[in-house]
Length: 172
Image (cartoon, rainbow, N blue to C red):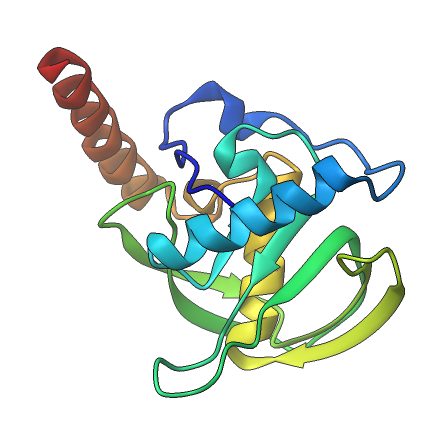
């Protein structure tokens, strides 16, 4: 396993749509393991393959509290098959370090996906898990949390992240 570099906005690779996984290969399993290690090292509750520059329809989520055992969930070729209700949730994102904003989401979702072994499953999710599923699925579509913000917040966050990127680039 390896910790991968997480892409930060405004990296254009974050806008690329992920491609479906045709088969579960050892390379895909290795990618899943690397994603989990990267997410835990960050630390975060979710990570999409596109956030590490891999164009595959995969994300991992673990919403367990620090004092609870890991609840790592792997979603390969995920799709939301049902949405219910509305919730506004304060979200952060590993691709937007230091940014936390209120985002409107469905309060409950049913997601269908494959696990690390290629077994198809459906999961009913609410609370943080439902929000995380929607957030990570957005990443696979090239949609970022900034796209779900109002115009003013979007401009502020865009400027902040572009300045951060410029500062980091000039420091190299």
